[in-house]
Length: 264
Image (cartoon, rainbow, N blue to C red; front, side, top):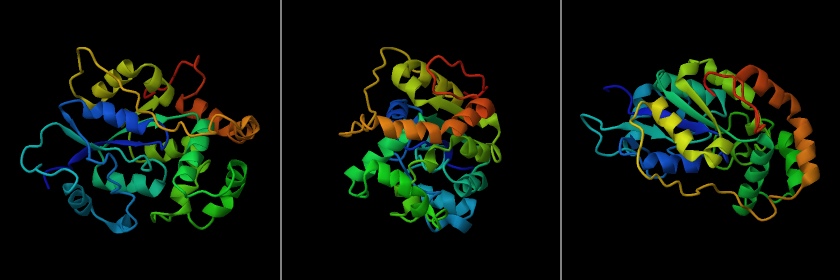
């Protein structure tokens, strides 16, 4: 193996705008992503003991005709990767020089969007309030279950919003200069500026000319904008988490907040 094929990840978070970012990156001539955006290599249920060589072999089907010199830079946009420490450890085993792009969305809005996505898929039968109350019981004993229909994937509405601990785990394996944190709200409001930062982080030439940023953000599910009291409850539940994220990692979802983190 002449070094790992995959050099960067859009590693999170689900419902954070990763589809939009992937679409924008695919317009760059020097960047390649899997045809389906998400390769789901490191979260494969069989992957706990895979070696770097095995991970590379799994990626071959996602990047055909990459023998010899590899034009551009290859990435993967699977947003579950930053969610679980085991996945981060597998990625470090595969490529300790991996560069991470992490898109963070207000965890309250992310949780609600996640709920409506699963409901539309037919994977959620409970009301929003009941699903949030049931989450701890649904996840009990499933913390390492990466099977396709696991509650860890489907019903981790609040768990996926615990960003501070996810970043702590990430920085336990990768230095901060290999991690770029973006807020979903900034990608939505200022896509050109956000993409300039991403291109610089990946070391590819900036795109010039009249760039068009089609609105790709998903999640305009019926009913998603309601539930003011559920939002209030979630705000209380995430209060400490949001404080930790701000103090430890320099990230806030206050539109007036100026990031202090060198990677933010």
